[in-house]
Image 1 (cartoon, rainbow, N blue to C red):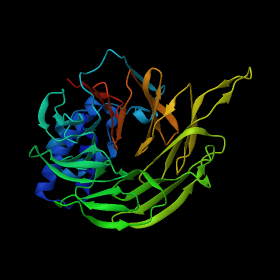
Image 2 (image 1 turned 120 degrees about the horizontal axis):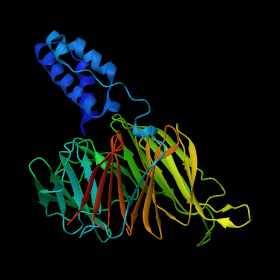
Image 3 (image 1 turned 45 degrees about the horizontal axis):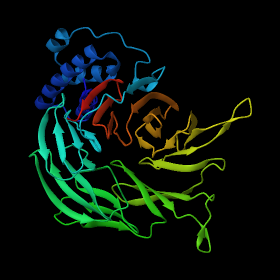
Image 4 (image 1 turned 120 degrees about the vertical axis):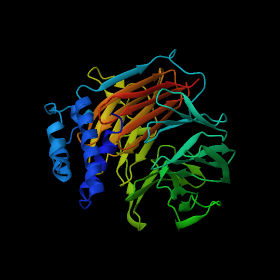
Length: 410
């Protein structure tokens, strides 16, 4: 049941409302839906919510008619999976056109960015619902999944287009220059960064105009992450130089800024200090509340005295842990979302990625997309969406660990 988390949230919200004939009718429908989810996937069952809804509905006939629920499963959640899920796609298992970005929508459909070929809205089994003739290499999706922004590079600028996923209409919006932008927005405000400012853009306007800005960024904006309550910005300050010559071995300075939403009040402005023994290349990712994941090349000495190349991962914030990934890899930018951390890296076989549960600091899944050179990663609260330049579009349910989409773009 792909929408089980959404039905659970509906039930929780319903319990906060006053009892009325309409609400008790909704409670009866919610109980039946939760019962169906429990029978199909017992580990998704919230028994306390189920009991509270039965009391709220106050329907003796419904209680008598409900089937017996399966016994609760222990440690059945994907976030406690042992050993890690291992998935591999071979170079021959590909589509016919690259997917530069993709988003899994709340209604179960997928939106795929196909570069100059535009964007496609796909059903659960990969059939095309609509095609949008707006160049799309990156997607910015509204939280409710009703709208999106298609982004395509045009030299030093970006071409932006608006997509309405309800009416299936699209239109060119504007051309602008951005250093970084959030991959999602609340339906009206979109956080972006220019060379000097962090802006909240009014997406409902026909013009590209800011409703709020903070100036004087301390470096080049790399990544923006947001939720309804928080927004964080990752910045990389230019390498220090001696005269007009940069010092090649001197680490770059990274900063993180965090704002509380919707008040847009700055909460943190901190310098990140990578571990001194890390090597380059070095990259970093940020979450909405300022937690960071640092990934860098780090050789380690084996028992025979030889050096083994690998990647060193350091995750900071309230859920601190470290890990190492042996082998010769090129680190790509980590992505954080909810309790999850996606760590992609490129190697001789293609692009691989590890998915970590940050609560326990453990890897829960490893993906190998052999033959790929580019990988798009999108993390939401309950789904991981991957897309690569070989036409593969993959969606993993982060609650059940089920691979719910494994599409090829033809």
